[in-house]
Amino acid sequence: MMNTNKQPDEHINDLLEKYAKTKDHRIRDEVVLQYNNLVESIARRFAGSGEPIEDLIQEGYIGLITATDLYDPEKGVKFSTYATHFIIGQIKHALRDRGKIIKEPAWLQELNFKMGRVIDSLYQTLGRQPTEAEIGRVMHLPEETVADLLTTREIFKVASLDCDQNDDTSGQSELEKVKDEKFTTFQLPVEDKVVLETAMDKLKLIEQKVIQEFFYNGLSQTEIAKKLGISCNYVSHILRNSTRKLRRILTTEEVKEMQVQLQLSSRRAGSMATTDEAVTDGLTGLYVAKYLEERLEEEILRAARSKSQVAFAVLAIEGMEEYGALVGSMRRDDALYSLARLLADNVRRCDIVGRLSETEFGLIMPYTGKQAHQVCERLQQAITQVRFDTNRASAPMTFRLRVGTSVYPDEAGAASEMIEFARAAMESSETHLRKAA
Image 1 (cartoon, rainbow, N blue to C red):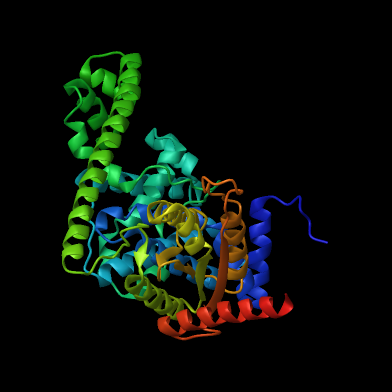
Image 2: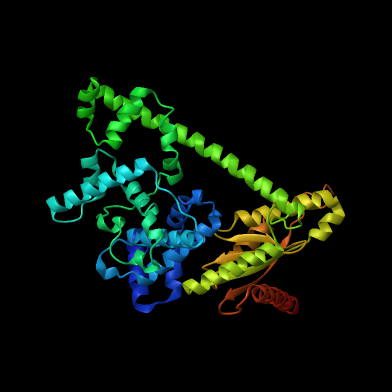
């Protein structure tokens, strides 16, 4: 009987040990699902590259799968640390292949150089790799900031973008060199760091000086107080207040950047619409059938590279025609929009939903095999629980979701084949139900 009282880390370690022995892909899929947040957090740090976040996340999953395949539990390296190295490496390789290079800010180069010296010095003193807490004490930085900087160093290793692919798996990364005492939460986005130099200009002169001396020049609070002729308490006060100000400024800059990106996306969408090449459906806001098939082809290529699976589901909403006859086309479209959004909101962030025809939708599920049936069952339940008023004496109307799935590479090898197989599975399932009735 399985022990349900195990801590999450123990459960993951058990899975990794089993996978190392059996290479059962079902176990690997379970491990991958445990690290969704890690992959998405790292992928979002590369948002400034200009690549779609969905593509970055998918590359991150490839790195995670590679890490799972290569991980040796007997080495004693924490899996989250090990996986982070491969996730970052895979995303960087993808960006390199697309010619996307992210430039490291000068202030970060300085800080990383100092951290490298501190790590080397502590290693000589301790005779082992230092922990994040030990590095933080020397640099007068919180442990969380040290963990974040170590991750950021991996992201901005521009040299590795220009080297051979196997360079990322040889030797130790900075993340591996530091003895990790706890899971890193990745709370400081890199895009915030990139605009830090601009944000600094908005602080008072005394605040700029204190931050410059503390973070850039490596002075202690006592040394800063002596150099600037102010008290230690005042230095501490300035550091606390100025970092809070920077956080607010950075947040504002991020919002502005999002607004710019939305404007650019809107212009691109408008341009596509005028050339009959719209990517999203006008009614539901989901991807159109042609683009969805292109994305499915991309996911198949990724699955082939990572030796993983990808599932596709056809989802057909029944009852919409009858509802339209009762309430009219406008309210029918409103209901269709609501149900389409319901489908999109009840799948993973890495899954991709599109509209195939009038009342038929498609769902791409990366790194998913037979578990696709469970996803579809959950969507069916969600659809049947929604009721729409008909403004008639009769009871509110509900809809039914018919589903059919296909899995690469087990059942189909190309996007068009997967869609056809899923449709056939849906029709076959419906035929069996009618015979049973």
